[in-house]
Amino acid sequence: MQAHRNMRLSAALGILALLSALVGLASGPPASMTASSPASPASFYHPIYEFNHGYTYHVTLARRDDLFVVAYMDASNSFYGTARVGLLVNNQITYGPEVVFNAGNTSDISLAFIGSNTIVIAFCDVSDNDEGKMVIGTLSGNSLSFGSVYNFSTHEAHSISVDNALTNQFVIAYQKTSTYPSGEVAACAYSGGAISCGSHQTFNAAETSFVTVNVLADSPAYFVLAYRDNGDSGWGKMMAGSISGGEITLGSETFFNSITGHISVADLTAFTLALVYRDESNSNYGTAQIIGRTNLNLNTNTEYVFNTGDTMILSSFGVTDISGTRFAVGFYTGAYVGRTVFGDLSSTDISFSEGAQFNPGEQSDLPAVSAYRSGFITCWSDKSDSDRGKCRVYGIAWLFMPRLSK
Image (cartoon, rainbow, N blue to C red; front, side, top):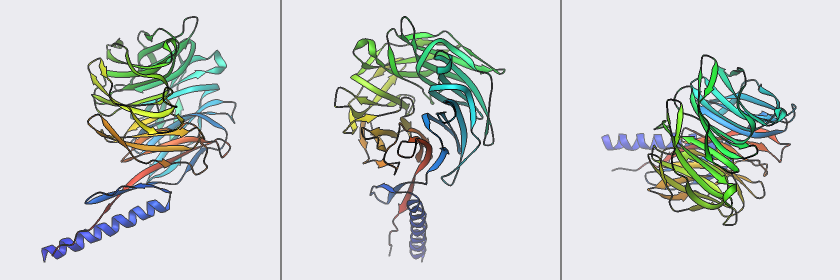
């Protein structure tokens, strides 16, 4: 009798899960199905939600729980830096009002949550001699308000990347363009309504691009920088750093690839990171490797190709940790086809899913991705639809196959 009850319960659960997955599949094109026992995942995209009806560029994204903030340049509104909150309910997105954080031409945008209701946005103010600036945003429900703008660099600042450390603390890295261009990094804090930064350390004394910084969530006293060293043949390099008392200590520079572009990195654990990039020394293929960290020392591993074609990745926002052994990559191909893939980790080996096209409109600008539950959110500029800004959730449902018992 107990066996029959188990059979009926297992079958009922399987039917419910199947119906749930089919509902999800109906709201977006299927990406992939991978068989396993006793369950298999059905992966799919949910509907697209437009966050800006005008021309949209420099899209970036940060998530906390069931909400996220998307920041961008609104080219239909004088190129102003703009942001809005997205609320996530049942994989549907509801947006709060658009809020301008910089009333000037804005580029090289980066943002991060530094508290439960606090974000920092760093950017290049093109209207003010390309100076590097940042601003604190406060969330209330689905609304945003911003404080005063703070200059973190009075020189031209490009390739800006920011990531949160401890509460109300963060790390900012960027390319300083002056008589002697260089890569710079600093630890900053927000307190009493004001931003303060420690000493700006030079991590690369040459022209630097595709800068990305990632603070280790499981060990927030450490971070990793990755970048292209234009002063050394465009090689891809990286460096670990530590934060203590508001100041930074840097480790040694580590080479990870020859001619490299479009770099992004995400921590999977306190000691492993997923590094993705465009390998310009190998036909511009999309490439990844697992980086190991011990204190301030970094170790490279085998390279794995996830896209055998021309690949563009959004620095700092092109890869996101899903589970510690799984990550997602967002990119577009040479034909502007926007795609995502999952990377699954076994030791330092990576296997990739076939991937999925996130924009049915065919042409997409650089997508930003951020983990959400067992999937992720992706936001982008839709080049096939007047460069409108759009987001959608990628989800996974598990199809439990009932087992019959005697």
